[in-house]
Image 1: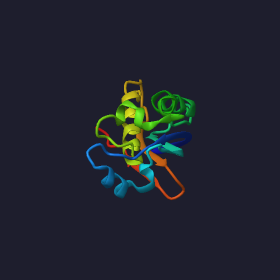
Image 2 (image 1 turned 90 degrees about the vertical axis):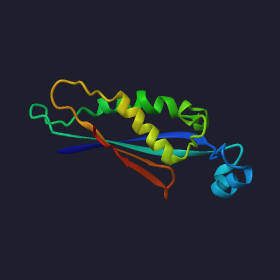
Image 3 (image 1 turned 120 degrees about the vertical axis):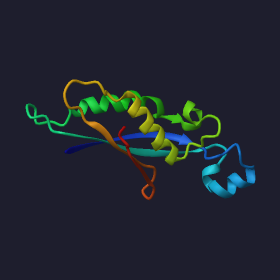
Image 4 (image 1 turned 60 degrees about the vertical axis):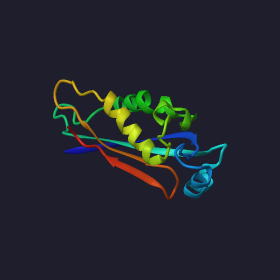
Amino acid sequence: MMRLTRRYRFSASHRLHSPVLTEEANQQLYGKCNNPYGHGHDYVLEVTARGPVDQETGLLMRAEVLDTLVERGVLSHFRQSNLNDAAAFQGNCVPTTENLVREIERRLKAGWPAAFAGPWPVLDRVRIQETKRNVFQTTVKQQ
């Protein structure tokens, strides 16, 4: 098995605020991240595909194919946006980076080409760095 990881950058803002909590509880839980005007991050997203190397091409997959999947499914929706405005974060879903990485995984899985002829790599991991000290990762479960 081989893994290919590609790194992407995008900027977005958010406010951490739960509608089921009081103003005081939100401020205590989220601190400065509960600023009513929000705050931004320069996120670093890593997406990993896993699978066999094609014997004819010597490639796991063309990097441009992964780039297109990530652009269409993720970056075009979140780049330069307020995450609170995204459909995924309406209602009671707070746009924490934990929830963001899960939403990115969901979007990538939904757009992943599952019906390709021959062996096709699977989505293996989604990792997002919010700050120099905060990194969140999900290992994708295969069905």
